[in-house]
Image (cartoon, rainbow over all chains, first blue to last red; front, side):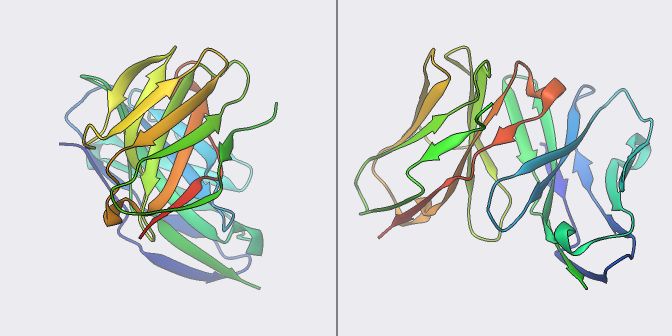
Length: 115
Length: 114
């Protein structure tokens, strides 16, 4: 069975702090994709980053960075120098195409960034 | 690009009724998927269509069905509504494989079943 766990329900930081959102996934598939999405109060999920199971290279994109480790089945996401506009719910998702396409989302982490 | 548009934005239905939710995807987005998001939870995958055929389905009963049309629009139909069907329903589209491009999501339809 496939599963995505975001253990942090809520995180509160002060503006300019760095914050890391944790994501642990479970799958027996060897080919899969991992995503992070942001859901602001408007409700529309916004695609942030994507990583496939064969590429463990970690990257930085502006204030965003991610750490993908297959050995621990983790795909953590870091926001550097957080801003009030980063306040939202962040979802980690796992996509596979075995016996049909499916995407599994975690329960989300609500991030509050205070000025 | 006009994004992903969903209609209606809010809807109230009575238990046992049927409902059709609509989604208009970006031009060229031939993959569309639907999600159910209960309050305070992550989206749950309902199904996905690629070029008008279903190519993936989550753990939802057959009373949840869908259609995708050649003009990049799609529908989610739910029969015999139950109270637990109350949720935000999200449509998402992708240019080709969502593995490569990720999804573009609409703002959703808030369905309340009373």
